Image 1 (cartoon, rainbow, N blue to C red):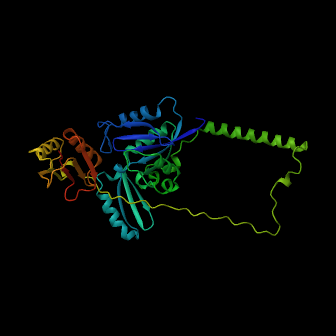
Image 2: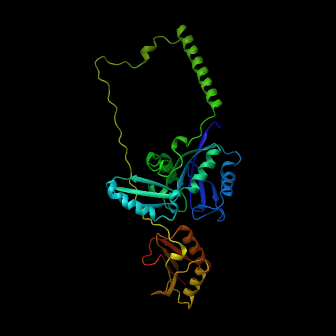
Image 3: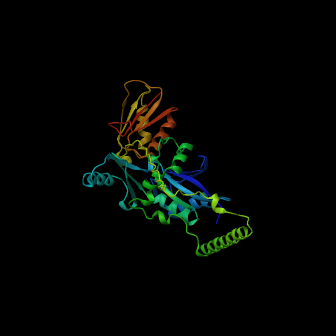
Amino acid sequence: MSLFTARAVIYLRRQLLEMYNLSGGLIQTVTYPSEIVANEEILDRAKFVQLIKNSLTERAGIPEYEATLVLSEELLFQKTFSTGSPEETKPEAEAFYSEIPFAAEKLVKKEINLGRETRLIATNKEVFTVIKEVLQSAGWKVKAIIPVTLVNDFSRGEGLNPGDIKHILKSNFLVKDADFLTADGADISPAVAYRQLPEENNKLLFLLLALVSIAAGFTVTWFVSRGKIPQINKFLPQKSAGAPAAKPTATKETKTTPVSTPSAAFKKKAELKILVLNGSGVIGQAGLVKKNLTSLGFTNIEVGDAPQEKNTTTADFSAQVSYAERSEITKELKKEFTEVTEQVATASAEDVLIITGK
């Protein structure tokens, strides 16, 4: 057993994880190969377990860690509605969960009361459950598994910043109310999230404490018998005979209600409605983009001309386009255009709106 336990935050994203220390420094990045993990599902469990072991738990010189796992926004399905009675909210919640494109047994759900609003959060537990099991088998402690969207003032960048890390580690609300270890569908309760000492170690620790207590008793007795600690009572605070006992002062916990973020079930590639508009003036450019995207499996694509020419290529995505599909489309566009701007949840009639630039 280590003499001390280091604390860390592990940020889980769709195809990678990032490990941060207390000051927000990035310690390690582990990328999941697409043949091992794809679309939040594990394709080869044995190789995934070995990847996590090799990358995190078997690094030379690493101390024992207490880890908080944080799920990125791209792994979460969320819905926020006005808080009401269970009879009023149950149909809406059931409809929301039924739209999530994962089998029910793979989902873990959390219902969080934010006062006037209630937020439903669900995610596929497969990846983080395996990571948790690998960490615990190596002696790590898993403190909590929390959604990043409840982190106050979350930076919404590519990773976590020092402010995010500080809030995650100090927020009692996140650990108590937003922990997926205590969510509906979780396989483990917080009580077993911490490694228990072997029975022999417990006995040894008890014996050591007993010896220390006995030694301390003999030391105090020796000093008192030789007058080294005279009139010890006069150094202790005295109670007034008639004074009433002081009442404890209650402290009120202030909770910050996070800003709600819209979310919806992701569509499959063939279901995504894509519109490509030629904004460069180059004849046939929209058709070329359509051809390239079709080769990637996107089939519902229409082309046209933009109302005016643009210098920069833009790609607007609705909330129903997954991170994997957004990344694939953006990567393909960057092969043809030097400047590509990506925006999320701005498309309206289409799931993806692409306007090519010069």
